[in-house]
Image (cartoon, rainbow, N blue to C red; front, top):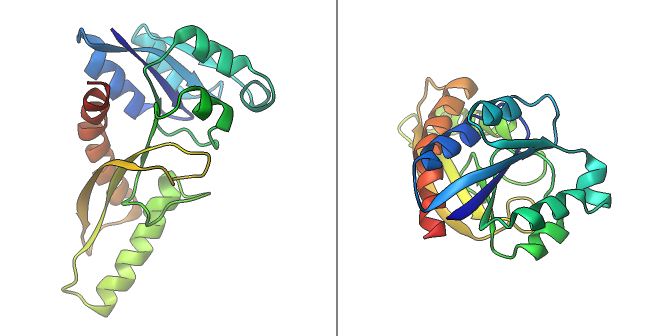
Amino acid sequence: MKKIVIFASGNGTNAQRIIEFFQDRTDAQVVQVLSNNPRAKVLERATQLETSAISFNREALYRQEDVLNILKATGPDVIILAGFLWLFPEKIISAFPDKVLNIHPSLLPEFGGKGMYGKHVHEAVYAFAKAQHQKNPEKKVYTGITIHKVTPEYDKGGFLFQQRVEVDKDDTPKSIAEKIHLLEYEHFPKVIAKFLS
């Protein structure tokens, strides 16, 4: 049975979908959810789904070996960043080479890098699409998701998967976010399963 560990910082809807997707499978399972936010809804979601849920602080992740030691004890086959907002430490990436994956809510390399997460990405995509549509109302504009390997730099690792969706003229940052969430829920668990196989 392959082991999946998820890191998340917030609401945890992606983490929940991944846990549920693997719950009845015999090839892999989510064994742990780790969060840098003790009040994150993701911890509650994981606990409700009978998955181990642990929160940690900056010290435990960066300066101490606490989080690294938890991972070494667990021995995950893949580490998933599902809305994890801190830069992932190099020591963990080195300890689990080619085993850390992230999902980004745009078609990288567009709208990536430091500070580009969640609503910041959707707002930037919205502003870009609006400008493009003003220049040429017939122009098609796309955004999407990128699932990629994690390196010590934000959003720089090799791509495993991209899926695009059109940004319509009447879209808002909120409606763009909703489209992206649907893509994430549909594709992220399947890409993880394929990666593990």
